[in-house]
Length: 157
Image (cartoon, rainbow, N blue to C red):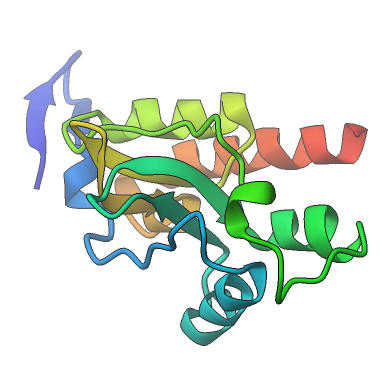
């Protein structure tokens, strides 16, 4: 567990690091894989995003279920013949395993994302989701605030 420090009076603040909440087992795809293979992985593992990595594990992008629907299916592109690199998001926001969870939640809120790849030296080492944060009682308020900010911006678009 993270370190506890006494702040003012009897108020305790738990500082938890990303590596304490992240999922270390990450399913990734190669940029050359097809969109249909990514969709099958999302379905099989009941997840919403896949990091796109080179053979050496370096993060190149991310593909989400929403990317597949909007950039492939709605665009009437054949998922069996479309490589992931054509629809993936390239400017990926990520965090380090040693980053503070509160900062990760603020990043999710400000960048309107629900899942963050966790990288070390450019290589994927885990994933952190808003759901992972919300399961920890200490951070339920941060997760709730981040989700509220994400949802309110989605409604405005």
